[in-house]
Image (tube, rainbow, N blue to C red; front, side, top):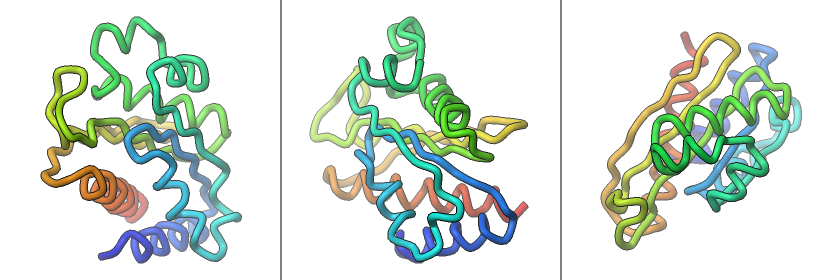
Length: 158
């Protein structure tokens, strides 16, 4: 399924459920929010997003503790969960999705290109998923958006 189709499914699910979402993006550079807001009706459910690409912006804009980044790196389950939780609190939404990882080429934080963490926060829990994606920067970023939307859609269907 293409990202636009997945985003349309997610927007419809959120509208039906009367729920809202926000995003906190690093690896995807605003691409997740863009795909969601391309869908007609998304203004009913999408509250906003933050692209926190640098470690400093994660700390300043999303209140991710610097010690968490120092201990685990920005490409970690812990930071992905904190990013999603912070975005949900900041935008006062039912859900928030975060993305962080290494698009490549090459390594960052000692992690190989294609290492990705995404997290989805709700009031009751925060779920994190680690991905290992092969391909160039565009492939890694697009596959991350697709995985985030597909995972979120499954959560909304429960």
